[in-house]
Each structure stands twice: as structure tokens, then as C-alpha cells.
Length: 397
Image (cartoon, rainbow, N blue to C red):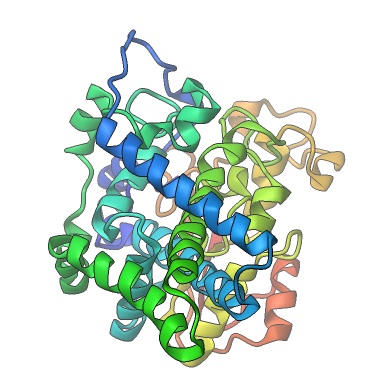
């Protein structure tokens, strides 16, 4: 799997380079090895206490009917948009290069993500690539083996593990360093957040429908910010701890319908860690995935293109070889046959690019005419490949 997506296409690299940079086998990763005494960051703890106090106060004023319903709806819309910008733009686009985007799409992502208040795009992507490359080890920023609280939010309240710092220096960020919008946001993140994430959202209800400053601040900033953060954090906690593993049984991430519902499609995490470059982050047709449909809509508008996704054949091979048996396909007979050993089955989806050990090639094919019809979307799981998408097909030498 490609946790550390580079600015250049894997297909332009040598085989050795592609194998080294893009392969990830979390099931081979060591568990936490060295004792480590965490150190609390009291500044962050104080800020989080203030955030939750203000957020809960805002929720209380809402349930006691002290806030305009319009303000609550507005806060929900702002929160939902910022989470989508993070999940679609920063996660699937910038972190995993699951598709390509125009300047205007990048601008929309950077602006909306700034409102989200989840640190700069650059830092978010660096930590996420590190998480995929060293998942569930001491080098994972939110290692779920350290418990629910730590991987949910505790990792933001403690000093980074020494391995996170040392391994983080090796993450290739050259693709983002070549993005002017990303680097501008990184340089001026704090003032941009104060303006776009705090000031503008709070001022609008006061000016447009005479909401009180107190209500606007408590609901639109504190309440919205607190709830959207916890929604995002469930991907690191719940989606790594509670669920099944139909695609890869020996890694920590799981499938969580609750998290998928909460985050519009990010809860199919066992699939995502199996195929991190798939723009859908889930098996389309098997689960609901609003974020993937939004990406399709952007493709129709011409803002994104070259959407990458795993073919049904690749999903089937992975499920039958490495799933935990909870997928419906697991009920079928393993297509490798009773006379073949596990090691003889083709490694069809361990790499996005070229697999150099088995004699199989994942070939990228596709066009760019953005024909992303709804009918085509419904047929993805039946082997239909709509034009404008990049599919990963399995070919024998």
C-alpha cells in the first residue's frame, strides 16, 4: 500500500524505487518496543479544556432553546463542510494522491481546511503519511496500541514519541513543498485561522440574522469546532479498535459503519489501509460513501480528474486471501484452488505500481473526459470502468 505518496507518479520510477517507497505491510510492523514515559503539553491541555467547556456550554444553550435554530443549522453546515474538506481534500487528495485537482480545487480545499482548525495541510499530511507508513508502532503519531484515549485525542496533549520525530524527518513532503497554496497556508496558518476559522464564521450570524455574540461564539465556534474534531478523531480511535477486518485481517484498522456515517465515508478503514490510494476509501456499492460521490461531482465539474480506484478483481483477491472471513465474498471458494499454497497466490494489490516479486503488473489505464455518470458509478462493483477514471487492472506478463 502507498502510505508515503510522492509528488511523482509511481509508474515513472524504477521497480526498486517503487517497491521501496510504496509498499506497506503493517502486519509485519513491530509493536511498541521500548518503554516511553509520556510528557504532557499543558498549554494544549488548557486550550482543550477551554474548547470543551465552551463547546458544552454552546450545546447546553441549544438544548435549552436559547439559540436561534438558524444559527445551529449554520454551525452544522460549516462544520460539515470543513470535515469534508479535510477528508476529501487533505486526506484523499493531498495525502494519498488518489486523484488530481485543478488550482481552484486546491484553493477551495486549503481555505475550507483552514476553517476546520486541524493544523496546516502540510503538518496534517506529514503526520498522516507517517501514520500509514508506521501504523501501530511507536513511530505512528496516534498509535492505537497505546489505548483509546491516546489515539483519539491524547496524542495531541502529549509530546511526540522520539520515533515519531525521527521517522517524521524521513517522510517525503517534496510534493507539498512544490504547492504554493499549501506553503502559504503553512507559513501564515495562525492568522489565517483566526480570520477564517474564528472571526468570519462567528461574525456572519450576528450581522445577517442578529444572533447574539455569545451564542454565535459558543455555538458556531466552540460547539462546531469541538464536535467536528471529535468526529474526525473517531477515524483514529473507533475505526482502529472496534470492528471487522474483511480485507486484511492482520492489521489494526477495522470497518466501522458508525464512523462512516459520522464522517460521510471515512469509517471503512480496513479497506482504506488496504487500498489507501483508492479515492473512495471504501468498497463502492457495498457501503454508503457520500464523500466519494462529492468527488464524482467535482469530476463532473472538471475540478478533479484521474480518479484512482481498485478494481473488483483486486478487492476479491484481497478478501479471499487476507480477509477475516466477514466479507460476503469470503463464502466463495478461494480462486487460487485447493492445490495452491498461500504463497503461490498472486500478490495483486500489495503495491500500486509494479510488483517485482510475482510477475504481475498493476497497469494504470484511463482517459480524461470526465464522463462520471451516475449509472457508471452504480456499476463500478460489476467491473464497469467509466471514462475519466484510473483503474488498477491485473495483467500477467
